[in-house]
Length: 93
Image: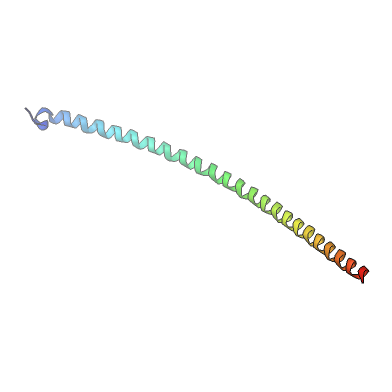
């Protein structure tokens, strides 16, 4: 049984090395293309993030307005109840 080195001539090893280098060059080019695509994706995510933040700001403003309305309505109901109780007590005396 021959060893690997005996069956591969120097010329064949040189060819293998050149082909391997060529394949790695092709892989590098593909990675460059992937990196460019990721740059595009990053820009799109920035746009989406900006839109989300704007939407959350609008939602926060609406929630603040709702909370203010609920507090005013609750305060009005409490004031009305107190006025009714005071009126009932005054008329019973």
